[in-house]
Amino acid sequence: MSNTPLREVLDASPVMDNKIFLVENCPKKVDALSGNLVEVLHRARDIIFSDKTEHNIKMSGVITRYLDYIEELYQIIENNIDKLQLDVNMLRKIHRKYKKYHEDHGAEIKEMYYISRDEMYPHIFENADFSPTTIRESIIAGEEKANKAIQAHMQE
Image (tube, rainbow, N blue to C red; front, side):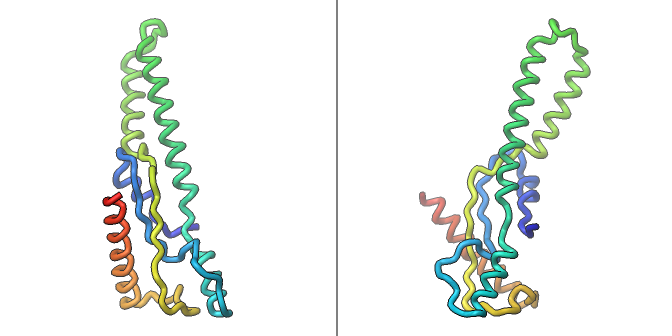
């Protein structure tokens, strides 16, 4: 469904809430309508391959809220362990599992910044051009736009 490695980004820094800058290879939004058949085909390709991260963003928030809820329940149990007559070792084991899960999957995406790449000369074969030159140019252009967006965000 999507080539965006968002889950990998979260897994790389799971204990922090994240601001993510995403360079879109196939932008969802454009400034102008297509003017000819080649541009229509180009736009159709953009829509087909556009980033589909909204679900992942929503789920990162849901997981974080569930983990917070589990922590609240754990605190209630821990504060009432004598009344509940629970095995302390079992409770500690459960809490260790929870902490590990929270460390591995507890990050929430707080802000998402979309950066659309420029396409000076769209062509019908662009989604099939994986030549080293094209890939290198795309990476450089994406890095430049991402750095500008990060700098602009830092000045806010």
